[in-house]
Image (cartoon, rainbow, N blue to C red; front, side, top):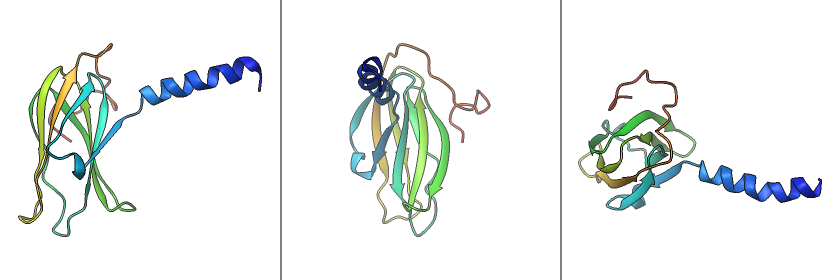
Length: 129
């Protein structure tokens, strides 16, 4: 590896780390988190024996739900979102069984340097999967 390439590697890794999406878990329920406009993030919750959780209820700043899937290997439900609007939002994900807790997280979206990217294009309206 050339000297120039060795010097470039840390910068490339730093840039890639800045593009990483954030994961939130049941341990984050009740927290307030900050994200930049255009940031993608995931909520990963354990699967429930009674079945999949309800569709997320989002109030406030525009948080677009992108996808909901099951990660069978990790035994989790995975909800993917993008923070499109600046401001505060509350995301609630209710369980299907009464004994399981509701997941609630407040998201404070800060202005980003660019508008939110819409993976997969603008085919899905806000608030839909």
